Image 1 (cartoon, rainbow, N blue to C red):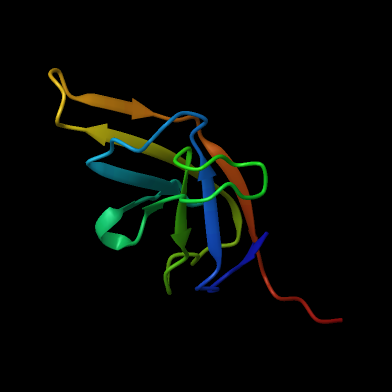
Image 2: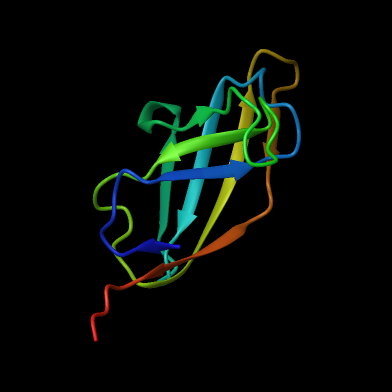
Length: 108
């Protein structure tokens, strides 16, 4: 779980297939208001390089949540797009959407 306005937390997205031949990795987030936000390798989406938490090397991506991304409380979605433009035709694979919650700070 994430909290609204948090940043610097690591998000891992599992593809369940080898991503090592990528030329671009893209995460597309959908906030609770149905606004899409796209993050790419240039924004810090990176290939997982070690087996961790049941995820296999080269089969998941890491992304450090940037400041300002988690601007709304509720259910968010994210999906991964893998692109390899060195093949003919280009390989473009789009993963399934995964949902996660963004909450607010509450003190009693």
